[in-house]
Length: 314
Ligand code: BDR
Ligand code: CA
Image 1 (cartoon, helix red, strand yellow):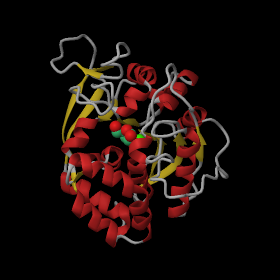
Image 2 (cartoon, helix red, strand yellow):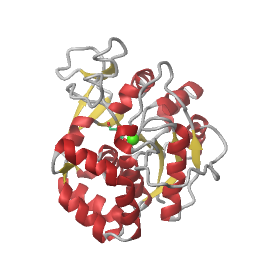
Image 3 (cartoon, rainbow, N blue to C red):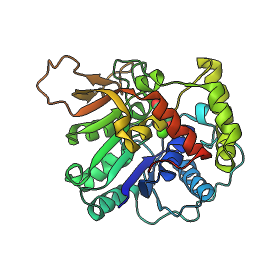
Image 4 (cartoon, rainbow, N blue to C red):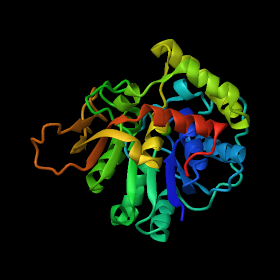
């Protein structure tokens, strides 16, 4: 049996790459996508999920979820991903074909359907998963695992709240609910993303050679790749795709650290920060397995395959 994956996402240019990795992986069956607001508004993230599934010709239900964070409104990341989240290339905004049922309810339903087998991968703000926990507090015990892209484990964030990473900073209350409820989270943070940069020229070459999927990805990511290149030079970073590598092939993990992580809800500069008990000074058991290093060649191979160069997995 293929491994059932449910992916909660806010596509988003790096979400798209991660989704292509999962949808193209021979060992995995993506049973549903749940989408929420994050990088851009829900009407765009939902449309983008539908467009991506059209490109790969797969019939996967897309459940729309949260339109806003649980408590406080937050700024989106349209300046990175484009106003429509997919590089403003004029793609259709049609929402025809969205599945019935809120994302949070769908997460609970699929967890019951695939009891103890479902692998949940969170690539956006954690609002939908926090709402699912309110619907079903037993959710953590019903899942096989939860992989989260989020956080900045030593405070090197990527938002205006200096220590916060985008997914956690967009909805800190939701992140708090999830980090308090799950006894085990596999965490891929922004700082791990920075350590796993890709050579931009090599990535461009993969896009140029990859075929129809790569052409689509080249088009939606062009503006974002330019934006990143202007700021970070010749390295290309894809946070959600690194998290997906961990989700798909965890045996590519070279080093990780088990630590307790809490979410900072107060203040302005540190709201949304992920506070890590690095030296085990607190009394909380470590609930996060934090990625320290992933096999860079394995990661490159997964990306290259996702862009259409080869079948991924066994
Ligand atoms: C995360 O924030 C979003 O902009 C990306 O899609 C990714 O999930 C990186 O901080
Ligand atoms: Ca994302």
